[in-house]
Structures are given as structure tokens and as C-alpha cells.
Length: 125
Image (cartoon, rainbow, N blue to C red):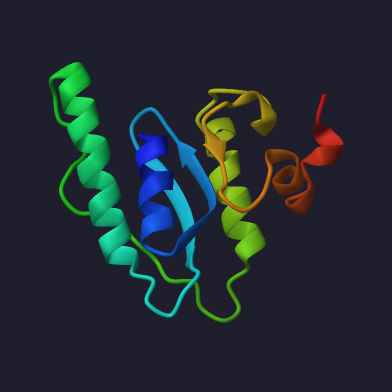
């Protein structure tokens, strides 16, 4: 699934600032990188590709119809959204520290940079 989202992001001019795959949902923070970036086309294509792969492998559907999206406005801090996404596995008690969860990342930043950015680096190890 992640591979298909990363591939689709590159094709549709989208940078994935952070993603986190949870057992029953996916969080993404994306940003257009070109004048013709199209978030809706990116999500549609990524869902289509990942659903096809998933159904082929497991014989059942992956996604519900539609998705919830939110455009960050002035005054909304990207840092807070990134922290919310990376902290999701902690809130769901899947891990004790974000670096323990394998299913999050970015097409822009490495994991350690994200942890430093949101203030978790000091809690590591």
C-alpha cells in the first residue's frame, strides 16, 4: 500500500510530508510540488492501485468510499499536524515511542529529522 501511495505521489506532483499506516486507517500530510499538483487525483489513483494489490493478495476490499481531508489554513502549524500523525500509534497503545512503530515515514524527511522536528528525539532510546 505504501509503495502505491509513494508512486502515485511522485506521478501527481505531491510530496508526502508524513504518513502513518494504522491497522484500520491511514494518515497523510501532503503538499503539492508543482503548479498542476492534484491532491484528489493523487488520492484516487493511490487508493485504486493499493486496493487492487490488496484485493489480489487478500481477496477483500481495502478502502471505504471517500476519505476525510482538511486543508491547513494560516495559523495551523504543520509541526502540530506532523506530531499528531506520528503520535497516533502511541495514542492507540501500539508502541511506547514513535520510533518503535515501523509504518510511518515521509518522501521528504528521514524519520530522525521528523522526530527532532516534533521534539521526540530527546525521548529516543
